Length: 174
Length: 99
Image 1 (cartoon, chains in turn red, brown):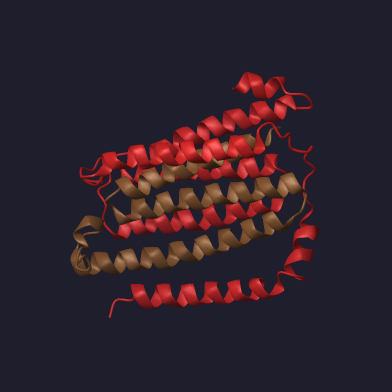
Image 2: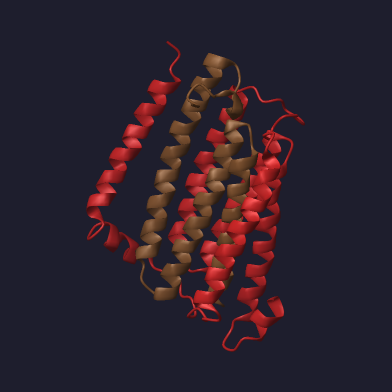
């Protein structure tokens, strides 16, 4: 597979090698997230997936999205997860009973989902070559946000406010 | 670089996330698997933005990041509430609403 990709015309080899290494790391880390017997280790493997995702965004020329990924996911969401693990008193260490009784059902479902998605993707995009990436200037993104996407932008600030208030109301102790 | 690279990676992460949602019993672990799924979708959006050379895909990816942050906040608050009321966050014990 990788040899086929590298042999395609008009392909930046270094970009592909970087992509392949990061992708392999991400898939290994993602499988570790869903199979780890230790909740804290799963959270730390998730950091690996999120960091790899930020690297892929940079390869795709989406620098502002990569910066947001690092700030929001690795900075904020992971702290929330670690607090959630701490406050629900998960054992620090291996823990039995992290999986359902029917966990084995998930394997064929995931394989079928991946098979279908992969088939559709390869059928639709075959060997389309992506155009050479140039990093997207953040100015272009902000032009979109403050022009045609202004209304959803305002709506999302209300959603964040509602989520913050809702989280406080739900988690309060009285 | 081929377009299918990004899309196949996103499909793999999505399937792994689906497996995690089905297999895990601990509510925090299910939320982590949902994060995997949301990230896979984001990678697709960025790849489509790259393919069409329009930045709208990146704008949508940023919206998804914001929604995911809100979702984790509310989700973990709910998990904490469930933990306080029941001393357990095992999802298969939350069966009051099953028919």
